[in-house]
Length: 439
Image (cartoon, rainbow, N blue to C red; front, side):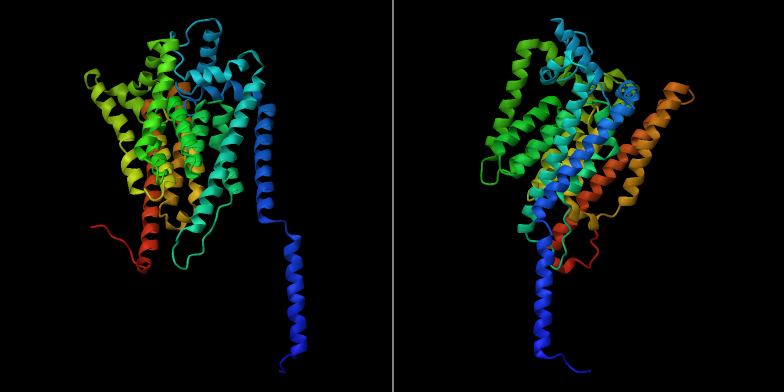
């Protein structure tokens, strides 16, 4: 075989260069492509929700809001409607023992109370789009930071695009069901996403405002102030916590002055004391039905501190990745809060793709997926057997919730272990081929 001549070789190189340039020129810039894909995902997500409302409107409005897996006493749209009705007739919404949500929601829906139901449906669709957009922005910001950080030597990093993160959230069946049931939990989720995004961008004042609003809407996001404070970098952590505390106290003091002490008793105290033992997908309701009254106060403290006590240790252990610490705390809230719903799990699962580089370190994906699917799938079945047919009892439904919560805890353990293993591979790459055993 004869070697090609220099002239022919130069011509081949020129042709390849021309062809490669032409091929690259025919492709749109990556930023424009990603923006277009994100807009397409958001548009399809909106269209899907509109189609479901148009085709199955009666089922959605009559059935879903009453599901205990989707709505709780502190997130129910029916209870919000009752509060709006009382407020419209100049009656305090906190006097009847039905409404247990923030006055901020009364202000947000006050104008919609006199409008057709389609307007409130549009608000929930807009909130879903806003949360998906926030997740996409958060994923993009984290990917940009990760590109500047030291990674595992020789690693080929896979980046989950923002449009994919938004799609995984918008088309999650749990998100769809929560939005169509019009659970007010979506407003707390929007504030949580805003807090994490602004904190990651260094806009600490805005992050504190979003964290305070989320805490006002639902007590448990108070845990997020720990990782948010660590995002201040050179700024004072104590000053951030002080701003947050002052803002939360200001909101509660303002509404106590307007509505009286009934407001505090019907919101914060109601959630902490678990006053309504309506079944849900959490751990509290069945335990406190069975517990003797003289032990109730003790176990309320134990259960509530079990969730809140994770804030500082988790934030400190992952102090170099405060965003990851915040995501873990969102998962802990979903598993251990007093009035959880499927929407809490949906937010946690929507945040996980932001750390797509941990997927190869996880070990219990199959187990976690099966536990969550069985927990979600069996809950409506056992509820039907217990409440509608009468052939079961509360133990059936609570067993499904135990499987569901155990699935969430398995995910938390798996993801946390994956991050620790990745940190070890970065700082001590010679251990990559070794098995870590704790003695």
